[in-house]
Length: 406
Image (cartoon, rainbow, N blue to C red; front, side, top):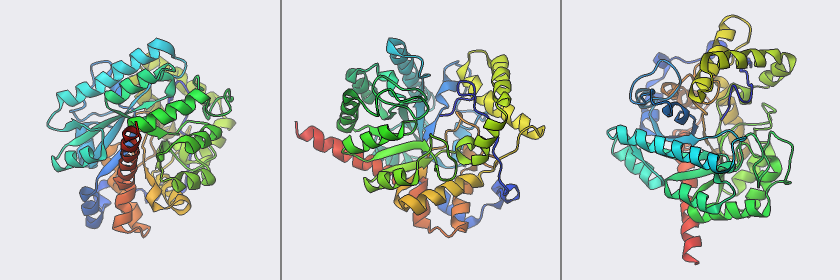
């Protein structure tokens, strides 16, 4: 996830395809039928933060943010992984407790909306939810610091329905190095490798978004199951450390894994990175305005960071980026890793979305754009969700085998 305040990230990228953006009315009938018949899986959404103040109604159409049930229905978002996130600086028992509060908040939203949502923890349950006409709700813990170096906590998360864990967030934890902090462990420690092994046994997907390159390769070597990058993009297009190199994507694919493309403009466009370096005071200005509007309310911070950036774009202070950059990253990842190894991990409600992909209702434009690029209907279905379901199925198979050995 991208934290506008904590990470001082500003969406300032630009591309030359502004006029190409598709509106809902311009989606072809072929694309509509294909999209509506597909299982669309999003592996990373930060809407959980909005659940915590008790005021946000997931069942109502909201004028802010990117995720609610009406807009998920419009965009045929069939399965959503709600992120369980605590800042990396929060550690120990407090991090565990706060993670538990968020897990309960997700489960409570499902309880409140039984006609629309159902908890899921397997690929088969996602498919069954689809048959029932419901949206499958899943969870991913974003940052290994939340287990407090305790495999028992990891097991508790799994028992409560958490289906993946990102090994680090923006800072190193006690047993793994992050992509955005000076290395402290040279990748995974011995305990970190035990975490990966236990995740394999528990049937939890190992998520390598946010980790250092060395941590990625350590996890890839240790894991008996495929890995995911739940919300990362391509470093060849945008040289952000959070993105994957071409070689990393090839190696991920070689073991059956999937990179789920992140929609945050700062990971989509090299122009963003250049602009951030050129004018760092913009970061401070936006962060200060976010604090002024939201105080310590993290759910508010996420939404207002995006809103303020849009205001800057309208005022001409910042350039804009369009959703076509998402397609560029998808296409590049397919060319490098293969069409069986690419999926979607939006970072909705936790990042700054490009124009044309403001919320979940806009997801059909991805299907339309991929068809226009010549992708087959079967390959589009893979990218929309089938690749992620395949990885889940394989992780579940490995888990059964490991448990049967004992």
